[in-house]
Length: 402
Image 1 (cartoon, one colour):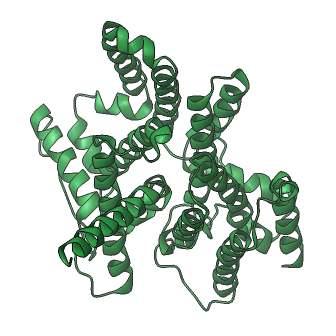
Image 2: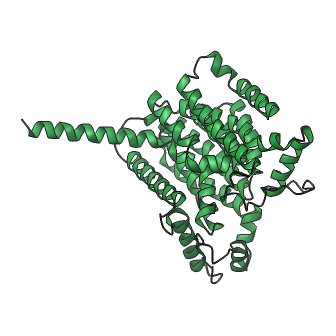
Image 3: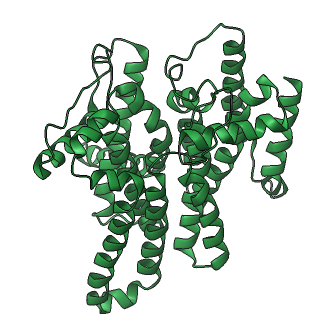
């Protein structure tokens, strides 16, 4: 335990060294990170001594390591197992291995803070965002134990940050950094190579549109041609990916139903079967899985289901508020408009991808622990809208009283 704690401290100081030099790490920000880390360590400690079993992750296919490392380092489980065994070869200690998600959460904290700073939010909003993002139950449950989610989050946020930087300013060094993290991210789950390409193409497209907006306003034809080209490139990538090739298969129904096999008697299961290979039936089934992924909940009698319901309401409210903001005349955060569009594109495509292969609310919460942070970044928009509405209401009320 002592070795792991010392390693954690060294990693934290190394990663946040520049922030310490700039005095940008205030006591409240450090306290939020510290609380998140302490809760994770507490869960690890309780699990080691049998006092706590995480029902969300106990059946995860990679929670318990195989006796031999995977020979084929392919995206998903094999990469994850090989990744864990690499660190085991460095220091073969059970507690050290169980601390890996906590070590990598330092990267998550660092880039989350960089993203929030890039969006130029108020200090009070920054603190609120950090609390929601790193002390939320879903984040803590799926990012303290040896599941793929901790790696997905640790590599997704750098991709988002460097995409933001590239949208702001087109520099070659930023692209190299982005590509590095995109390659790592693409190995953390099957199908994420498609998401990595989408992140890269979206960042490039939105950067071009933002930095050459005057040109596009005068020459709409260029934009009309540019957008279909972007879609064709993305379609080519998807159809040639391992997941896309299965969708192009003649018997997609059998393939998809086999992947979505589940225990029908489980309380949280929503069993949706693709009846045929008909295009309309495929689209209808995918739409239904997306609906269930976002909104299905059996009841709210337990704390975890109540949390899931409240998180669902929060994310739905933030999405609707941001859509309204984008199409309204409000001027606050105008400099972030393309970044908000970028976040929505990545969140929506990742969520649809997760939804297609998810069959119960437990897995839905697990996947959302990776993607919901993208939506939480809309929170200051909602807060400003709420404050603006309250001020207008009070003004009208005071005027009516005179």
